[in-house]
Length: 490
Image (tube, rainbow, N blue to C red):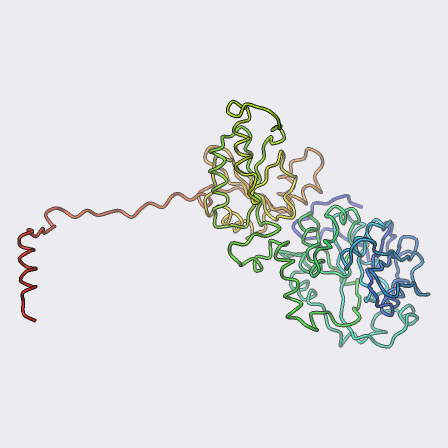
């Protein structure tokens, strides 16, 4: 394994995976299957897993029973290392997947739904990518079919899915069209969009590093999880050899309008890149679009107040302000209020402590994840109303990782892309220059400040007429004219 090659954006072309059946796997895989009832479909899914080409001694299957009544039972045809794990805390697919991942022993977590039948090479196809490097997420393909009268024995014996299902009449997944249009996601701007489950493989350490699935997300949990994976810096890879069929049509086919409405609030609050879902003006969202980080150490309250006001009053309102300073130095207890050596710092804390848009921390986090962008600049250079909007517009053109604005006094202001920071932290060694890594994977640009801090608009010139051109009517003459007008017969 080449530990961590510096892949550009989502272009995984430099990785040369071995052909199926012509390599020797070494990593262990834990297949996590959340299940709530559906015993008949699960039996077919397990029969397909029992026939996988991936070595038995490197694969375990965890069927996570999410409150099934009657409880899930293991059928006769199943993989050698298969066990049932009950959900003890919470309910729903996310809780079940997390339960399985927490109980898993494998180095790779393979998510698979209980109503899916995978081809024989499915696990092998997705796992081979993870033998190349350890920051990939591999995605399997699926088609939707009506359930035919097929038995687990027939599934186990079948050489390929076409022997069991009429694939010509199967409904394709909408993600496959996106994959094709973006050169296998190599040219995708947001590849996490297609990582919707239910067949995804990733390193166990990466699964836990991003916190697993969010049990509070009832719809769209796979997409929200994939978004956090993107912020972590992973590369998404679809594998067309990892084919599977989904037994039955998806919920969107049954009630598309309600399915779309049900997922919208979850994604709107948690995926800031979905700008189409954040059109309500004046709203506050769970995950902001930009974190504005200002170091206020040894800075007066008046300067910080001006900077914060400018940050919150820009055209882009979907922000949070982080003030970095020695806040932990502010001890409680008796003190002289006016001669306090930390007077300015306490004043700032008392001024901003109750505004939910402002955070006070001693040290900025390595990345602002899951917030997709972070601005860092001098606290005494307040943002212009258009600064953030224009900086994001600039980096979104080519998906640059960092935009550095060179200020006239030699200092800099910068906008950082969280996914690029995450990638750099995965690839860089201790003390490494993160910008150098980001320049390789996403690009770093330097630009002058004029567009981001435009000069104030000059007022239009005022023309004062010449005194000779002004005709001043004497007051007596004006009065006489008005009287004549008033006395004139109608």
